[in-house]
Image 1 (tube, rainbow, N blue to C red):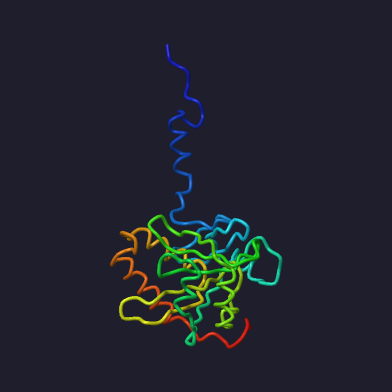
Image 2 (image 1 turned 60 degrees about the vertical axis):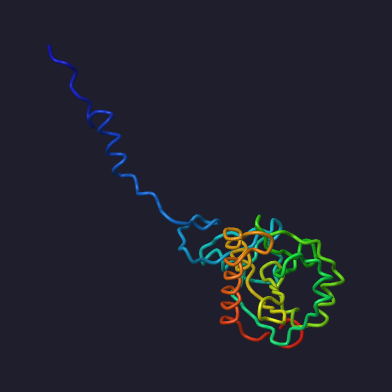
Amino acid sequence: MTGPAPRAGGSPISVLGRIRARRPPPVEGERCEMCAEPIGDVHPHVVNVAARSLLCTCRACYLLFTDEHAELRYRSVPDRFLSFPDFRLERPLWDALEIPVGLAFFFRNSVMDRTVAFYPGPAGAAESELPMGAWDDVVAANPQLRALAPDVEAIIVRGPDGGRTDFECFLVPIDACYELVGGLRQVWRGFDGGQDARALIDRFFATAASRSRPAPPGARP
């Protein structure tokens, strides 16, 4: 007595094998957090203004949010670096900002309608309760700082250290600041960060200097 004839298409195991063979291979690497398209290791970012968070995006999604005058929930982070050769900051005014370390970045939060300060530490970026009057005094002494675009750019300031006797200041994309803070978190040792942290900060400021053009005079162009 013979058994039942095999069903058309073969056994369940062979069917599963054909399904697996036809399945496209998984996509490796990062994807755009807006449309899920694959993106490279180097890619633009968009800020979620309300959440103050960065999204990794493809170029097409990035271009949707470049209009800085539109009322948008998201804003594209520009690739602009500016230097301030005539930047002036006296030590008492820096102390009035109540930043406990010699490095901080400042950006304008449009939702809160005020300037926010962050400084690096072993746990990442710590937010400072910035005295508004002190920051207003810094901007009054350096009106070129008004070139700052809200939410997507930052003013990064480094105090005197080692052989440097003056404060350094650059306008940079906000994602560059978060990248710096992430790197510092990995190498930070002790209260002041240690030698590896200082070397990373030195490289960041050298890169900012090489990519910057002098800020235009007066208010934001």
